[in-house]
Length: 229
Image (cartoon, rainbow, N blue to C red; front, side, top):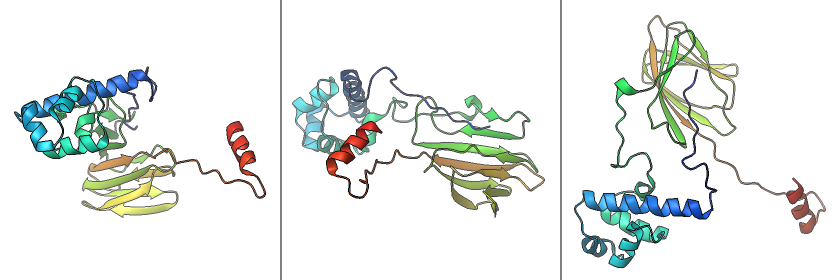
């Protein structure tokens, strides 16, 4: 049984709707104000350090303006954070502590396999990070994911046999493997003690649509066919 949660942070607002932009302005503003306060910087001090005017910084913090990437890069450099720090939703203090005793561990029906999410699972994530536990002599079939999804797995304790289609790879403690998760795959613990592993699942990116006109087709025909698709 796999522990994956897919949720949207704002299911009511379309990606390019006015509501979505308002939410983005608010998010960037709140995070900028928090980061500046943590560093005990005044607006004037941050303006001098970043080269961004005090007026612009005040507009960003009050959610009256969405800054350009260039402006955000300047401010991020001055605050010594990544640009992504302005877009955090799950970590109001810049980090989120995930105590082991309060974690949600998903256990298979027979109790011989479990997965614990090691990332905030209340919002959609490009990468999923799990701790796995596999009982002795147990085989757990993997859940096939969308094409382009990859798994990076490292064994932290014991041994694991990873099967992808009809190919098998035995992993000892410390060994790692990367494989395509859209293929039939499974994990087997061949040992007589519990095996543990850490798994990172990288979700597939939506590929661009490459429109290749049929031989002899005109550009207008290609556009028409794309609209009907």
